[in-house]
Image 1: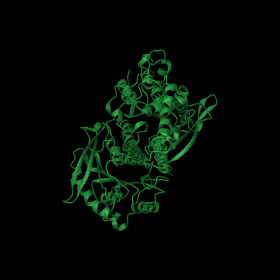
Image 2 (image 1 turned 90 degrees about the vertical axis):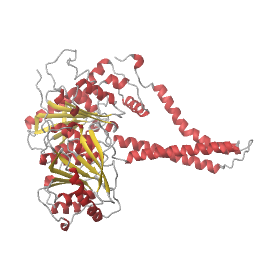
Image 3 (image 1 turned 120 degrees about the vertical axis):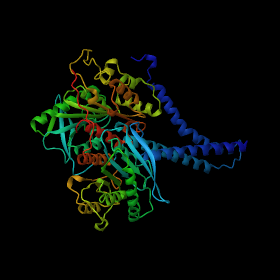
Image 4 (image 1 turned 45 degrees about the vertical axis):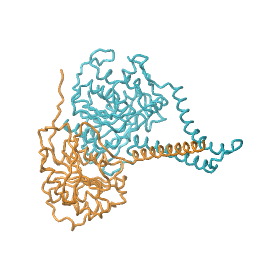
Length: 265
Length: 363
């Protein structure tokens, strides 16, 4: 009798604790997993692997929109370089944003938390170069209208690599760390850089943004500074995405099928 | 009309009794279980289970902490779905002009006109953004602000009983007036365009979410001064929405919340017709008494929709009804598997799609 009671008691209490912890973890993950999968039939998603060397294989995801299948015009292509402290699918929403506008988009996972910024930049610059060579083979892409989109440390990779690449016409950077004059080895001069930063960024202070703005000679309408949002531009993500897209549309003038208003008798 | 026996509604007495039963069971039964060993160790049974009172107290405290944690996480979860943009958007590139939109009877509704660096000083195209039930005009700054970079002046107004009007003027359930007020927003823009010249009354676009979607699908749709409309997570058929079977507990709680707020979840056919685009504005016999009206509408140009399949506030079926009724071309809509009522985690994707809608219309 006593043994049965103890078994039941332990079983009930353990079961209850397990169940409660699971719910708490699930809710916690749901609350703080701010971004995740973008599940819609309007998106075409394909997982890719880029073999950079014997030791390095980079995962990527290619995105397109069902509205632009067999589209008559070539469109600018976007390479998304996300935060390096998050794995797929945390960055899928950025790629979906561009892909739904008809831009063939490639998001690559740069999950590499332990490197210093310089080590990270030096590692991923050649990787980006190599992946870009494969990316431009996509027949949907207007190869002279490439866009690099980088978040945080990845933005520095995008800028340093994009400035010297003749195919890259636009670089978008969010919370980009400081770039020194000596780091820019080559600047072909026809690339527009659009930046977003928050004044209360504690990782990359606003002074670094101002330094970058002057160094890269970024005009007034090519950046947005928010008062709040921090390093991860909390709450400012959709605004930033739309800002970049509107500037990209102004600059690259991709061709969209126009829907004319029909006069119905 | 849906037959009476097929109507699904909240039976308040049984719902509350069941809710209280569950609550009491969660709060009381485990504590009783935890104390059983201690009681068994007392006379007359005096069983020695090796279980001291302290253990029971520890279990009680642990359970209490878990319960509080669970309740806290539930609130955080709901907050994470409904309040996705917790940080205010402030940038010196964007200006907010406070306005008062007259709606007749000496009343006016507070609002903002948001302009950005690309908004022209004269003849700026106008985007009117309508917020949802229980919301306020600031809810959709995140969509309005970037559109100022396209040159729009964005007009956001607190509906009656909402935002600054809460407790001051109107009620949340003044649906008829809230929907009809949209025409006054357009009147205001026309008047201001004439007097100040900063807005272009020939370039007015309407956007609405949830209740805001009801406004634009019913009122803006039929207003010839509006070029085109976008409605997200909104209604198609009020009868379907209010009388369908509720699948989840969350849906029941949300509906209970609406009923507490004073929303009639058993609309009469007349009320349903007033709120349902498929019965009101999309109806080929658009006149209120079924008579035809002159203006034919090119829906392919005029209407764009978005919805999430797991929407627990306004069921996805509404979107399906609207889509089928309008026979929409695929580029005019987007639906997501996840995201619930606020497009949680999908805001950037949704904004991307909405930009295409503008660009395909020459913006």
